[in-house]
Image 1 (cartoon, rainbow, N blue to C red):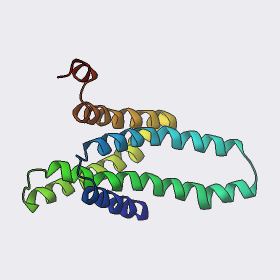
Image 2 (image 1 turned 90 degrees about the horizontal axis):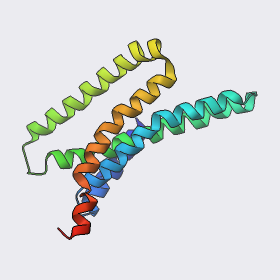
Image 3 (image 1 turned 90 degrees about the vertical axis):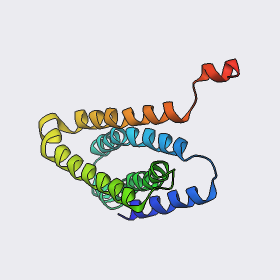
Image 4 (image 1 turned 45 degrees about the vertical axis):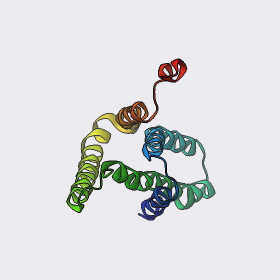
Length: 157
């Protein structure tokens, strides 16, 4: 939760400071989120190779909380940016409530499906790769929307 709060604060600062569209930041953040699950599993397997009380303590007390905070910061950073994109036409607060409700519903369903079905059935690694693929789809969509095709830039269109 601390990571989400810090990420949201940073996202709101970016919206206030930068006059450009937040679309590119959302695309970049979504790519980082797609990489987060496999990277987390890689770190877990690396720590599994190490042994010792000090290593276990360091992983449990420092590394994993820092990783959780970092992943929370990515999601927290992305939400204000996505909200700015969603409300770009100055819509009412009711639409903002709808966006927040969709975010909460997605988080709830994601937690239930991941912990209740995907991880027990497919294991951590396959679930991490599936999560990466699911996060990669909106990252590619955002990149396609935010970054114009290179062919148009080369032709001068």
